[in-house]
Length: 95
Image 1: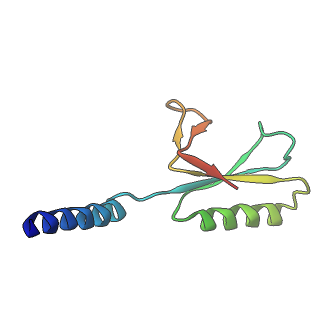
Image 2: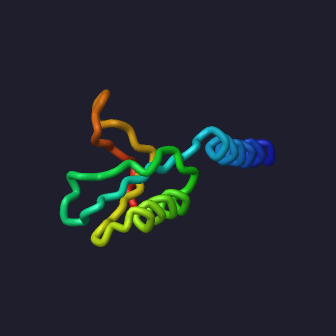
């Protein structure tokens, strides 16, 4: 019984470590210069390591550009909706 518990505990620990090590979440950011028109956007960057980094880059772009009615979006692990597309499907989006 102790062996079984040890194996389960080690398995769970290894699973958590390997997930953290091999699964690198990445955030991509977009700025919408006019929040009323989401068809026009500017890519701020891809591959941010955290949501906070993505947010900061988007807010910096808005401030530098002087947009008055802008909005932004950050997406987690985004992929083009089809090869060569300029629209993306993300696991999660956040502001």
